[in-house]
View (spheres, rainbow, N blue to C red):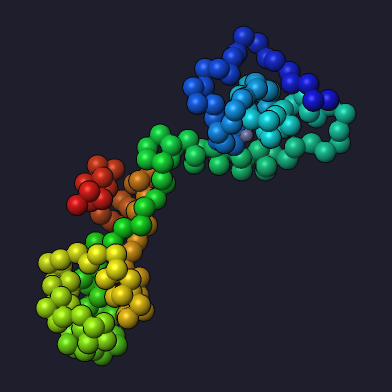
Amino acid sequence: MKKIIKVGPISCDRVNDLICELCGKETTRTDPVQIEGTTLCVCKDCSKFGDHAKQGTKEQPSKIIIQSRLENRERRMKSKDVYEAETVNELADDYPERIRHAREQHGWKQEEMAQKMSEKLSLVQKVERGDIKPDDALVKKLEKTLGISLMEKVSLVKPEKKAMAGKGITLEDCIKTSKK
Ligand SMILES: [Zn+2]
């Protein structure tokens, strides 16, 4: 029952770096199988979802499994095409407000906060004004001291999510910001 049905003239070699068309996994070889009436070049794992695998078994591959594998594939393919990573953690644009707001919530003066963090007052002031971007270590310190998060996930693949926040940011903008 391990036989793979070769379908038509299709050759899976057309996929340069051999990515399973069902789950998106990189694999050493793919085989064409019929799934839901479509021919897909899939990895060994996924070939069992091929229609031929239904013969002689009562356990049919569930559509849900296929659906979730397809979604996986979509994610992997997109991220691979664009950047390798679907989202990046970035310092939030409104970090000065977040810091000031959190500090005020705690009822701290800038001096007090600087003391708690063992940092200079001038540094706290500059960060709150947005004059300087805190580096990773400082961001962590700020987050810990204030109990807030200054990072936000920026989607590189689906910028429309950002646009929904009312900013209308395009993919290009995302690239620009991340290069700052
Ligand atoms: Zn697969």
